[in-house]
Amino acid sequence: MTDTDTKAKLLDAAKPHVPFDGWSETTFRAATEEAGIAPGLARAVFPRGAVDLALAFHEQGDREMLRRLEEADMSDMRFRDKVALAVRLRLEAVEDKELVRRGMTLFALPNHAADGARALWRTADRIWTALGDSSDDVNWYTKRATLSGVYGSTVLYWLGDDSEDHARTWAFLDRRIADVMQFEKIKAQARDNRLVAGLMKGPFAFLGRIRSPKGEQHTGMPGRWNERG
Image (cartoon, rainbow, N blue to C red; front, side, top):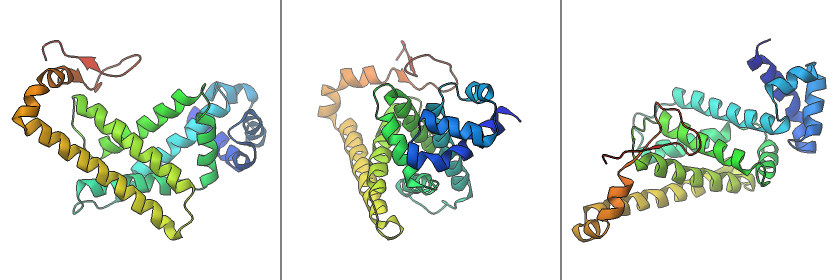
């Protein structure tokens, strides 16, 4: 088996245990045994055990979302509706809410919070990239940060939503995206206002030097500084 096959087999074996034992070492060991994977090989593909299993589950959901997005007809949709659809498809890719709930419990722990934040950021990045975002300045960051907030709050709402077909969640999502669009409108108006633009000339110039990490390898916070502005 390839590493990809091994990971998939371990993840499938782990899922039934997660609602009872969480994304834990107990779950990881049970999955290893039931999948018939040698412990050394299981640890080689998932060095941190259950934490890497939980991240693999999140990645699996992202891939399914992207697959569904590719199949969706969005030709007549407003951009805000495309974003809402992507978030909805991401949540609908989850087969069991308890797997997400247990994941949020894991990534709420201080020693795993950074892993959870990176996973959330990657989801937002994948959505923007799939929808054709071409920004290469500070907007690259603000779009992903904003969508991360929208997605994170929607997940929390979704976990507690027992309405039919999660109707209340989708209404909540629409309100959050409406808030974001209003914020973007205010930003544009501020840039077009001569008085505000004058007062913010310095900050705008500073932000204008920030570039996205596209096509580059970085350590730490992604991005680069353009000295020429």
